[in-house]
Figure: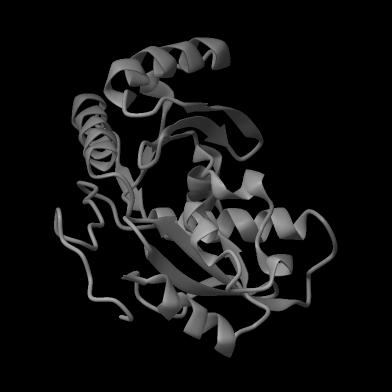
Length: 232
């Protein structure tokens, strides 16, 4: 299966052309200019990979949470490609993809074939608020990554309460800066883990098999210009 994966939910632009034997990807900081450079970078990566859009079997796109405008750009573009080239499209939450990426990176460091651990993905929101979700990883299960909570939007204090219950959980994502001084730094994943790679979206589909197809829809956890009460 050949997959085109896209992530525009953060200041970084991620594009991957991936198959069972690997592939090529880019991850560039573009700020708020995804709409200006997305087509150019996709064309460049297709040329470098010697792929054509007609050869792609599925499109995968990050659905958020993250930057509102960035999410809309990625989803609109993915759905447009799906309609134009008649390719199925799958949406995956940024939180799930970050957790999967962190688990794979941890596996690459040592043999974790019998390990069980928790992963909390966090994406920064405004002030002391974060979007987050708790996952568990069981290496020997057919589906090793499982969600333990729904995606949440709360103050960082709520995440600290979760960490107190699971003091060895790994924390990953742009929101971990809000945890500084609240949890042990030993369980904060290294900086390179906090930027989602588009290849992680592709690997989730390749390794998890079939997922819902159709129009990809955004994962919005907060209304615009709304703040949550402190302590919740």
